[in-house]
Image 1: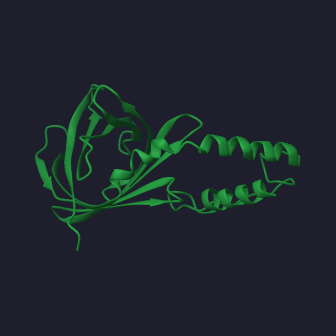
Image 2: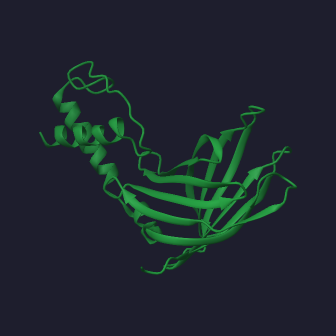
Length: 212
């Protein structure tokens, strides 16, 4: 019975209300739902395996230091060869879904508009990779990718892929979290140019916001 409750709870969170806030209809075809085991014993075995995979939370706990409110300073280059624009985002970072998803909300001003960005970071124990989802009011397409720790740089490196809506060409981005301390960290971002080479276009240094 406990696996029934656990599975129904997880299904409600991830299928009805996903980590990204989306909603999905659940098709309850079959006794346990579509693509699920057809006997209680295999269903319980699946629940036990899922719990075992989820038991090690150390990859997520490495990101606990990011929770809180942050002020950032930095600059970005909108297109290769273009001018650099100074930005000063503020960020609210909170754990969601029982500390399985880190939600980062950014707000910053650029000439002519205010940009809102949402970043979601989670851990996939099946593939042993971090997952990242990015949404921005300044870019029409959501972006997603995977991440791993880079032991050489002591950084968490995400590879994010999206497509240029004008050319339909793939854009590959390296999003790096590094210089991680209790009260500061750095985000940098590189993307592929027309030659397929990575070029840096964003750098942001974060410091913990003072308590109100």
